[in-house]
Image 1 (cartoon, rainbow, N blue to C red):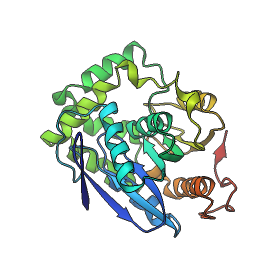
Image 2: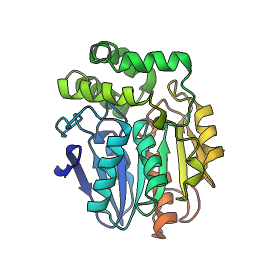
Image 3: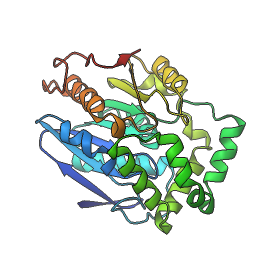
Image 4: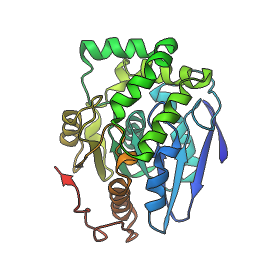
Length: 282
């Protein structure tokens, strides 16, 4: 594990392989190991970089409880350091929001974009705002996470169960629960909503979405697809973390996206240059 000093604190990252960079951003409450199975399936010629948010995994607590804007700054600085020529950026949940935000703000750094059950394209509504307000309280996060993680993940694979156990462990640490609460607090801020800016995304974009995600249901993915020019929606039989439930599907999409972005000929299922044909596409 390597660390990088950023304006929001030190973050840990892990780099595997060599070649064109693919940067993987986890959900809040989760760490980079959620992508372990996906990374093992990526073809040669890709360098995968996994990131731990402040207070998550191997990263210490940040200089303050993180927000989406702070996480975006962290990733921007990481890309400037590790992939100044641009990378394929994939992110789940808050990671998807951060990835999309950077694709809007720094298109030179985002050559391809995968949003995995990402936020910023939904209408929170009254219930959503109340729940986000509760989740901004560390005591509530710590108490609810065992039940909440089961509800949003719908775990059924060994990777699902490992990711869920890790998320519960993260929310039992002071640094982790503080970070998770800060991330949820930022969901209620006006800048969370990316819908008015989504049309500015120019990178080739794949929306990989769990059919059974109760937090960000499929209609949110359909909104994002309609707003992001040329984007493609791939529906996977999973909950909020399709990359732990069905890593082969996500790896195939990432390989196709890297081929589209870099012209590498990389593939996992399907022919290079063509979208994988094993999943439902909309």
